[in-house]
Length: 505
Image (cartoon, rainbow, N blue to C red; front, top):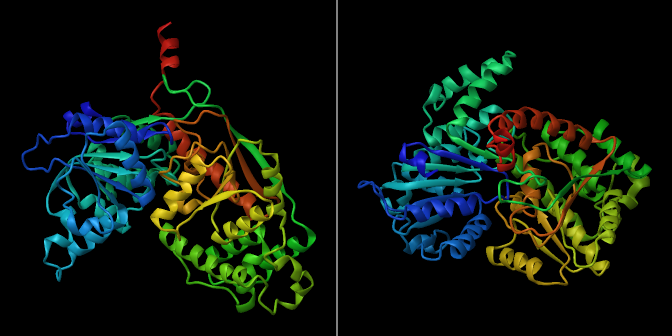
């Protein structure tokens, strides 16, 4: 990375999740704590998607670079601190968006409202850079607008859905090769030819460009990466689940007869039906919810939140809302929050197999599932901690401390949206993905909270899948995305030490 910066080039540091991107970045910062550019601040600005990731940065810098002056530019510190002064300023992506909006607002003339945009930083690092993959979103545009001498993108998944995910990163790094830092050129040279079936030509072009700006090292638990050796990852445990006749009747009703305002809404309802009928009670009572969302992560998250809020109301009442549709009245029992659905029964079976001393991290997309899990675990006498987006920063930190330090705390219940990236949880050695997600790299990120540097035990991943349901289709979508994106990235991989020895033998 130092050589690339000396040549005026940016870097996509695409180590697999958990292999030390933050530590490598800390080393880079230590080599350049003072700016050699007279028109730039000496500061390295680090942008992360959430506060949890920033706190992870704080811990890493304190451990490996204690002499660096580090500012967590968040909360009240924003009112009293200048982010352009310390060696490292840590800021959330939402703060960058907010200040960029103020910078563009003609009615805001006070530069103290947008200090991130009043000068040039020595370096800007975007952690979890895949979060700016939408070129039409405010996140990408705000990051592009930051002035800097050098740029670094950290991501284990530089592309998650399609080749176009790479464009915002190339523009942020100002990669001028083939003109791919301009969207029109990217589409004419990459997107359109790929759609026309020119797959080999498109892949070769991207490999040429990425090989000059990206350091990609996939995770390989067998051979490791040079001196990095991780314990074995057992990721083939697919727990197939059969719904009971009553649960299947509810699922079929949702699939065939219930009216929906959008395809996304129907997809979410089918996913809820596969988890637990109680998640559907209020929606069935009043018809369906939500505006029609476009295919963006923010709008999808808003719809998920809306669905969760309904289910939370039912759980709080501890009884189903009445009346159910007449054809489902015979199955009223399965709509009770106290009912153990087939998927929850499968989770309980996994928990009972966990050996003493082992710990388990359970991910779900629905907060209400976490509520019901908490009730079940308490009933089983299992000590647990919880981490989700409704909790404050102090509560989240306490939850992580508890799973790491409390020997009696066996399980951590986590929202995949809140905790799927940027956290370091090697205290756990089992991971449950309670439901699949369309983007396989979101799951890879989640698993890497556990399977990472610092893990000393073999890691087992359990993927819960309801047969003959929408979850089958989701897995097919995952496989298709992995084939396209994984194939491209594998051509950009840096050979490990063992492979180079074979070449030289």
